[in-house]
Length: 539
Ligand code: AHR
Picture 1 (cartoon, protein in one colour):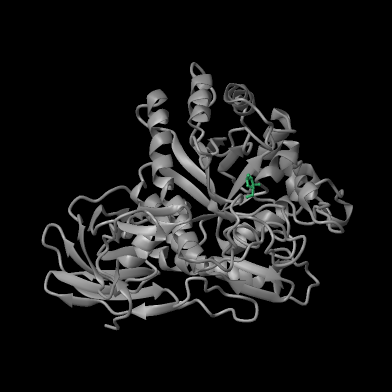
Picture 2: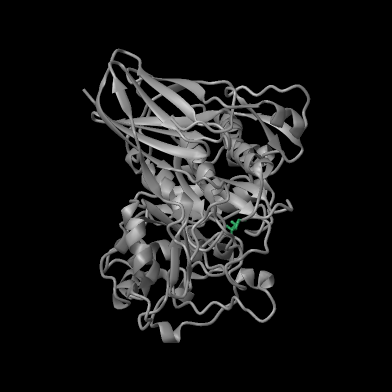
């Protein structure tokens, strides 16, 4: 193993709290971690929908990011960027949430059906954030049918966000009938067939508004509960639905626990308005932080990862409140927006608002987040990264004929074996790291991870957040199981700021990672600042 300047072990408890204490504790040894997998006590199935996506009519997400038009010189399938479709298929994207976000509560679905040339041009919520000389005017060329076609091409399930903020229960119910009613029943079904789709779209997942505490209507939780009841009581029941209520702004300092409490209190006594899913938005929110997005130092690296780790606490706190009203936990969490959100100023082009650079740091954040989701598979029905292309925590950046996968894309690829597998409880023994953060030092987990089992295939994913030290991880199985073969992949780079650009799209990519099996134990050397995925065949 290559030895460089490493920390003595994963415990860095230097005296004092300044960067000096952290620097003084640097040594030249790797850390050792012990991992135990309880394959004799399997957890719940990891819902594949946890690895879901979100696209909104915002900046360069839909237009150019996905929709390039049928006559484009950019390779496309029915007007949609072919490379995007192929990559989404490769990671097995299970669902797509659309049309927003904030855009959803100003969107009227009828504007997006029928011949494209006849569709109206409409106002887009994001207009007010566009830089001078650029506009967000909505052409509606990408509408309901284009979205459904995209889902079919990818093999993803549609998840529609309905307009509560400026829409009506009738508009919502009509949209459901248009999508789901068989031809010959209601006129809306015949209209859908006339527009090219005889077979119902069979949309199961419906979000009833978006961020109703903010851009979705600026409501109080009790007010939203009343709206929710009105919107869903007469839901047209062609397909057994999965209805998702607007949940809290989990990334706010107080986690917005009052929203969860207020909403469920407001729903008490209602018998005709089921809440199958409860949305939670958790951004690792650095919008008000002056750090640069593409050029940063260790304290900024750790600050972002530490904040990402807070997701676990936010999930637990809201879950506890939900349990107060629903002890059997019939309602699950739908974390339908998550990602790291930085301050503006480094967009890929003016007008593609929120299209920030995406680095290795964001890939580690992705892995940490998925490991939390996997470990809480009993609570989470679905999660959707915000957003899949050209916006916030993107997997892809696209600008006309230029295109690249970002480092988080590869984490989705590495974690694919977890989708639909049984989660395996794991225990990691390694002291916490004391690391520099922007305001001094802090402690974060030295190694995080999750594991799952599908028949005899075991997948273990691990993240080493340290920018200094590799970790030698020794994995054992409770109950005496053994691995007969194993292979590993790793995502890392010598520069913590590494990213893929249009000029250099393969700067950060997957490499293989040796796995040593000896008797009942196996060992892997996880480099510093790395995500590792280990796939094992059990004997
Ligand atoms: O993802 C960008 C925006 O963030 C969404 O439109 C909104 O729901 C959230 O505030």
